View 1 (tube, rainbow, N blue to C red):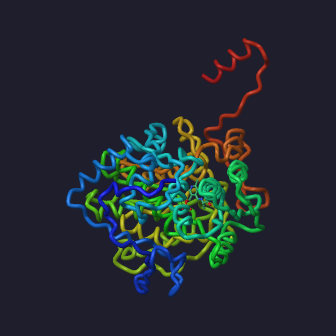
View 2 (cartoon, protein in one colour; view 1 turned 90 degrees about the horizontal axis):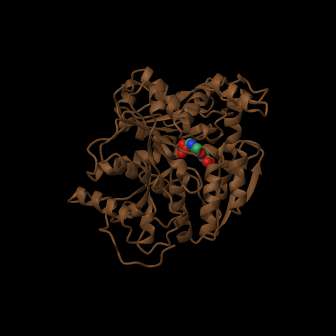
View 3 (cartoon, rainbow, N blue to C red; view 1 turned 45 degrees about the vertical axis):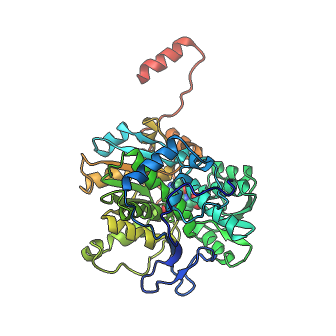
Length: 465
Ligand code: F0G
């Protein structure tokens, strides 16, 4: 955590504030007000950074590159805080960091071929300190939590937000309390939260039930809500757009594709690209597309029902989302039926002319295995991207020669049981679930039992070659 430092950057934010995303309401709140939804209309909030267009956008790019190559301040080594001029924090903020961000943009030739593309790059947010994209947002949210004077940070989670909050709260010497749907979180993610010392509360119910409870608890003065309904989370997570553009040498990809659960990540990427456009750092937006799992796809369903005028941004979007009461998917990270940030995310998708679609359990599982064959690997929810890109190419929404970047959100080791079951041919939704079809391992790679002899091993090698 940094102390007070001299202003190292030309400030671009003149008077950031929180604003209601409902244009008809337009309520505004100071940054210090600890609210998560609009007090007047109940809609979600976002931070209006009032970014001024710099006289020389190239100088901004150069400053960021220099901060990365040669950090002047310890916090410049963070892939969030080196973009501080885009973030609503003063220079003397009590920055919390575990040196998040700085994740690679990887070429994925086998996945590209699988999708029918000439090339595909994967921005792997699973390389973050706790193994998921949540860490960039959590650096910002925990910094704001310290400023707020709260004592306890709380979140509902399918596992990754929990692990991230647990780690960042420990770093900031805060109590972390985590609400998890019992029996629905991967053992690896749950173990991370325990290891970082968080209070883990297992709830009988699903993620949406946990999220409702967190929103009720947010009224308590000592409690700080760290879910992505908190607009400071979105501020940290938007930096992935900045880092991605640097890695693309500022050539805007045609498409950026992300998984969709609670829809915080898609909201953040949409905001990040929009701010780069507003500042003149890029000349156009990439088409932002969001992929949901078929059994937990309320936004994809809504998107499919939109009129051509709504899709073109010429008519109002619906006010209500029909939630999925009992969401189902083996990609437990995105097993969410009532996403809190759906409206902000949908607007970003429409503004960029992207798509929201869903993919089946089989499509997710096979895409995950292909990402593995690219020597990259990811958790199941992240693989919705490659499965979705394959579908979007087949439907003609993405052309073979277009430049596509997918964001992988979690590390391969986040859910080892899923991976092992796929390769052993035992992956299926729990028995008793409606539509519980087994998932076939099209790229199955089960371990073989082999006699402890040289000849048996050589015979095995020959057979597999
Ligand atoms: N991918 C992974 C690996 C996730 O953990 C999540 C969300 C998503 C994608 C979806 O992102 O919610 O911003 O649309 N995980 C949350 C959690 C809900 O509690 O860890 P989103």
